[in-house]
Picture 1 (cartoon, rainbow, N blue to C red):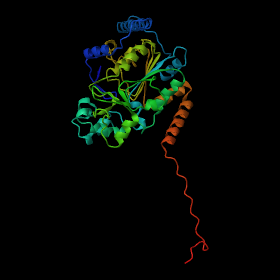
Picture 2 (tube, rainbow, N blue to C red; picture 1 turned 45 degrees about the vertical axis):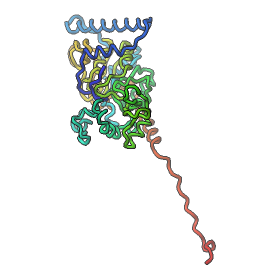
Picture 3 (cartoon, rainbow, N blue to C red; picture 1 turned 135 degrees about the horizontal axis):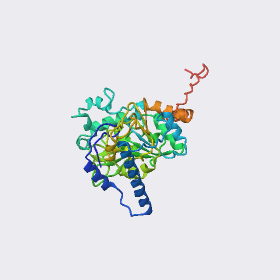
Picture 4 (cartoon, one colour; picture 1 turned 90 degrees about the vertical axis):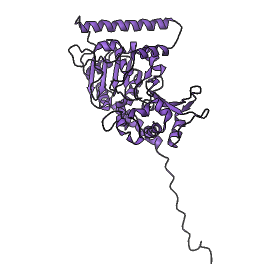
Length: 387
């Protein structure tokens, strides 16, 4: 599937349904039929039937969906999380969880990344993330990379809340649009993550017949030496493994969502506009009785359930009289995580984790203190050489 979206923002982009279906099919791993795959297919079919049943009952007014939460509030979500019903929690996160770390989102007026790219003399802002433009003119991207390079920012409360969920044994997976690697810095592993729009963690030669892999430290050295990274084998450009406009999403995105989403008990969406496909469509892939919590500056992901059926995302319902499982908490994402942690009785633990981890990062970045130089003893009158 070709990505037609910026690598770590939640902004509007169109995707051809036919191309999406075709490329998604091509990226599916080919495996022998087994009991495990049969079980996965049955689970997927059951989930689709469950969704259809709920869709028609709600749209046509036939029956009322069973309420999953005691109340459609943050406190109601916390009670569900503390119950036996909630074992697998998944996150969908976007640029909004990293803004408090000092990393700009993409399209916010005035402060967004695209509003501040005039100095790079681009034909239009999005060109900096287009694969064709990059291959012809890589300098603007690497200049921007110096400003936003991973390792210059600390994870936020949101990142550590997900780490806390992992330590509580409740984190199934984090699906992230971000490329800043702060989830990794906060303590999530490669297995915990699906980096939907790629990552700076690794880089590859763009040469079709080379594809040599390079490490984060190798790329960092090149970028901060003001050098355009070139492959040591074939001299082609080397690009971080982030998804540019015109590139396919990682195959892990498709394989993981197929196995993960039927078993999600709670979906938490943070800091994303849910407008970029195919990422936005994930909210419609959880079972119809799975609660969905949005922590964001504004309500998003709302739309006709029929579009969710077509795989176009949306379908969250916060306000209608038919709302039964979706909750929106509006405000800064860090504040939302702290509020939820307080209801869960974890706030002090979360704050202590943030304080301890930030201190550890500061200590690692601080240069070792130089030993104080001892003053040389002054020569006495007797020590002076005789004239």
